[in-house]
Image 1 (tube, rainbow, N blue to C red):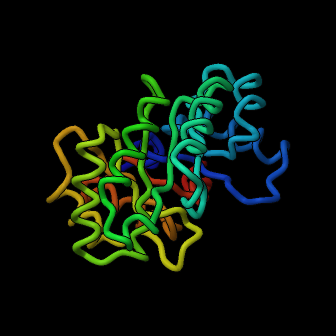
Image 2: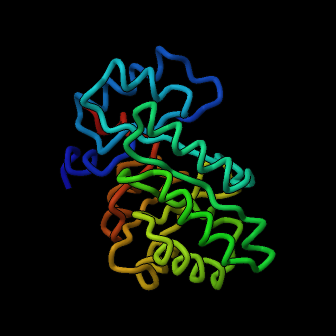
Length: 213
């Protein structure tokens, strides 16, 4: 794959707590120049980025990074992000519900957030590092039935990130309308190409500058 082919699948990401407006603006400029799939930025910067870069595909995160805010809070976050100019929403599920065996609550929450997104893209972060194989398979069903657009491996803030084995597992168990995003620990060109070759449509990474030349 060429660098540009890889970049076209990259969510160019900066989610550090101390990210400055200058850093966010640089990220957005790079995304425009190198035609990445999107930028993924904190919700507090969405309005700023939309104002400066009207042509840019902007992604933000909600319920991030721990996922244990209520469904109502996540819906408000999603609606607010869309109002401020977000095109895509990456939400974190409530892992407590998963561990309590309440997959109905997980599915209901995802469906509610999807409604709050309207026609915008919803990616669902299941944070694979905390899950059993059986839980991952069950969540593929939840994400599919709830109508989300993507299942995503990780926040990048957990105990581990994306693993090839999880991408293969997703591919076996998601519905035909659900795509896959890998994120967390993807730092080399080889990593990016490998995850794309396994069927990922998007890669979330803060290392895309390696391909920008």
